Structure formats: C-alpha cells, structure tokens
Image (cartoon, rainbow, N blue to C red; front, side):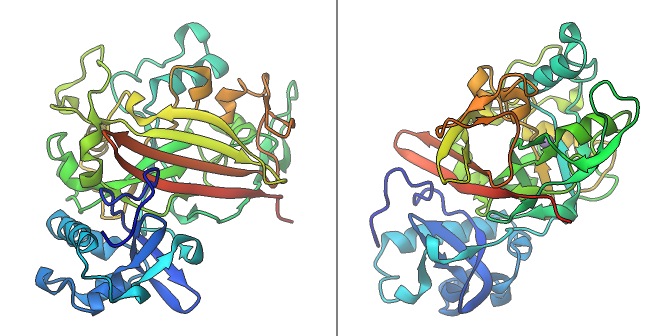
Length: 408
Ligand code: MN
C-alpha cells in the first residue's frame, strides 16, 4: 500500500470515485480521491498507465467527466480497478507529483448536465409535506404510490461545493394577506438528497426498463435542492416548483460509482398497492447509505441537525428511470436525477428545515444556543454520506455551501 488510509475516510481503496479538480498551477482535470489525497488521472494517463485500455488522453484533461463516463462502464471500471491495483503495488512511488492533499485542490462540478430531474420518492417526506400543507388525514395524493412523482428541474443553476448561494427574492403571500409582496425569502431551506448520474444515452421513443436501468446509471452524488418555502407555497399551484427551487441546486464533487456501492444493496420497502408491470423489478435495488446534515454558523460552530438513510426510499432508481423513459423521453450522459428529499421515520431524520422545525413552529437550537426556523445568511449547510459494512467504507466527502445575503 502506498500510504495509510484512515479507517474513517470516505475515500477508502474500495471507493475510487471520479471528480474534476484544479490547482494553482494546473487547469481542470480528472482525479480520484484516496484517503486525504487526490490522484491526478491526467498525469497518470500521460505516463502511459492507461495505454492498455485504449482511452484517448484528452478524456482525462476535460472540464467535466462526461466524455470519460461516455467510454462505458467496462472501460471506466477498468480504470477504477487499475488504480486500486496500482495503489496496492509500489508502482506509483516514484511519482509523488501526481498526488495532492485534498485541502490544496479546488473541486468543481463533476458533470455537465443537460437536464436535471428531481423526484419526490421518500414516503416520509411526501407524508410530512402533505400533512403540513394539505390534509393530514390524506397526506399522500392518490397518484403517489402508483408512480414516482417528479418535476423537471433547472440545469443552468447547478453548482458545486463551496459555491455561495444568494438568498433569492420573489413573490410571497404574507399570512392572511390578499395580495402578494416582493421580498427576499424568509424561509430558505435545504433538501437532503442524493442523485444518480446517467452513464449512457437512451434513444427517444425507446423506454429503459427496470431490468436495463442500472446499465444507464454511472454513479451517485449528494445533492442539496435549495428551496425558498414562502415563494414555493404561493407559486406551486397548479404546475409545481419554479422560482422557489430553480435559483440553485448544489452537487457534491466526487461521483461514487455503482460498482463501489454494490456491497451496500438492501431490499426496498414493500410496495402496496402492487405497481404496474413496467415498474416491477427484481433484486435488491435500495442502498444502505447513511446521510447527515450539519449547519455551521457564522462563528464556525457546527451542529448536526439530521441523520437519514437512502435505504428508506419508497421508489428506487431503476423504477425512477423506467418511469422517466416509459413515455419515450430520452436521457443523456451526464443527466442528473435527484432522489427527492430523503426523510426517515424519526423526527431527527427529516431531510429539510421545513420538516425538522415543522414549518417553522418548532425551531432548532444550535450548539451556540441560537435558534433556527429556516436558514440565516452566513449559515453553511454541510451534507455528508457514506456506506459502511464489515469494515469497508465508501463515502461522498462533504457538500458544503454558504448562504449569502440577497443581491441588490
Ligand atoms: Mn427536491
């Protein structure tokens, strides 16, 4: 082994995720994270380490992972397993210039997403929202257990970690008022989500079945679907989310491959009523991925406010993709598919401030004793996630973004 990896590192040798980084002296390029270090894959390719795989050098010097992902799983996974074996040998010892400390590099949005879709697939989240905003007795709408509800998000405002999020302004209907006012949102929220990244193009008119779906999924990231609840509540009828959502969505830096997540498959919840045949699936399609959210306040003090798990999802990724394409809609390499807010059954497992504070009525107390109903300027939302089983840990690193005061 080239160097020791901390046993609590998200980037064990079992992971080998892919991302885009730059340094003071080098432009964007592909890298992987191992332990607390980044390995320069462009540099490794230039030394000929991937020659046997017949991959164009240019792929490793791109601004996004798309062309690399487009090589197909056989090649991308060969790169991953080759890196694993190189790390376990001595062959990289003479190339210290290929390694950087994670803290010394700038991480970028890993993929160019032509399209971004956000699902709504956590039963706990949909039930909580339905109870707050509609009828507590009929919290889930009649369609919810028959199809994975989703909307088309906005790809232009996808950002990476460390990018500041300006508090949005918009139309809000004050309580009891007849007329809306224009103001900066007072109910800025995060949504704890994961997303999967499409690994190959599908053809318009040709649905992707649940059995084929995993061939089309390259890997996963963490996703924060920033939401302005007051803007959302006034605008969403009848067509759903728009200005309350489309100002920013942030995406974690390292794409964890489905191969790395393979050991963490678990059975999903029983779906009752039975789904239509095109949504039926075989095998374990949920994944046991532990998720956490913390708020770091202006003073730098961090408070963990949520612990959830991706395994709670009612609809799995294969069903989401099958439903997305069953009408002939095509998907493209790099497209991003958000899970929807991942809430668990317990109060401290709810994946948004909306739920954690029950629409602002039960504020959270942070470790510095300040209270939060929704996010304040200068709050940093930090999301982390990892899977762990029998001493093997595979994680995503941290997605963190700070709220900036409204512009203008
Ligand atoms: Mn969402």
